[in-house]
Length: 473
Ligand code: AMP
Ligand code: ZN
Image (cartoon, rainbow, N blue to C red; front, side, top):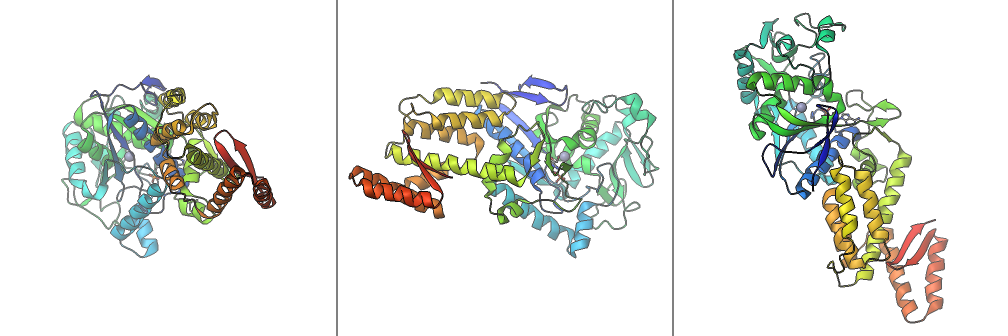
């Protein structure tokens, strides 16, 4: 099995060949914890999760590192505006550490609810300022920095590969078409490595450094922490497409300027945006949807996961309540069919015939083909709908596939096995079981009455080779 992944660096599909055979070092940019994650952010983390799970299924030992940004991220990615953490703490009358702690917990509560696996390493920016300072010292020693107005800047003009990732052209960069707010910069794309209090009096968290008391720029944290945990060169770096032109471009420049090694990262993986009402969803613009707002509207976090898997990570995905409702119904029908299979399988739970292997192979091929979750989901549906397969065989293949999809189908199978099902679904299943008993006892009047009673409630029963399934009409 071999993974092919779209690499932003080169803009093409490339076979995944890690630096060390059998291992994959992966850094995904984590949240800035000044507010709840919005559902667009969660798309990025589901993408990272699918990538990690796919790599593990393919047999790689994955080290997945994620940072928590709790200092230095200004409202503009290009050093403009206020520190997001400082602003949020001020507005809420709390300390920065309280805000960071609260929203970090909220973030993992969301990702746990969506069954997004925890990264191997989670690292906070404020706990790695020493590593950032050491890295800046190396960049400075190699001649890529200048001081102006109290800040230390990275001089992009000195770095020959600047903009390679974003396909930015050096001559266009020099022309400096943008009106730059920071007059200290030699080039508009230069960025701050270290701020001193001369620029932001309001900054609450400051550290001593060779350049004065101050705090780090946002980009340096990802370079410092990824290299600390993954080495000076590693395999994969991921984030949303918004990070290509500034954040990731700057991460590459400063990392390679420090180490002199090119390329710093072999594969750059970027997810497209989740779009809401034909506009970008952003945390700083206020009105955004959180996972909790979906839960409050009656959706399970896994409905949202299922919705996301229905789109390829490199395509824009339009969020609407209607499409979330469609995802919810599809997931419910999936779990219902699985429960029916569990009933039909009885105590026999092991794969016996091997007939489901072709679906699993197609499933793997879909994921190996640049993580095509829509095609992978289609294979899952093909598998559970195949009347030629033994229920026990189907169930064990379902479990294999769910190792990557992460829809908690193992719990569905376990619950069904114990005869448990939530709420209305449980009641319907009990009636289906009673009807099956009645039919066995040739009490067709009772069986028909159960079917008719459910129909009156808008529940339609369908008898098939895998047992009886129900759907709403
Ligand atoms: P932030 O917390 O703002 O640093 O963003 C966290 C992650 O979410 C980053 O990888 C962003 O690129 C990504 N992201 C932000 N907005 C969206 C969106 N609307 N759809 C998908 N990913 C997004
Ligand atoms: Zn980052």
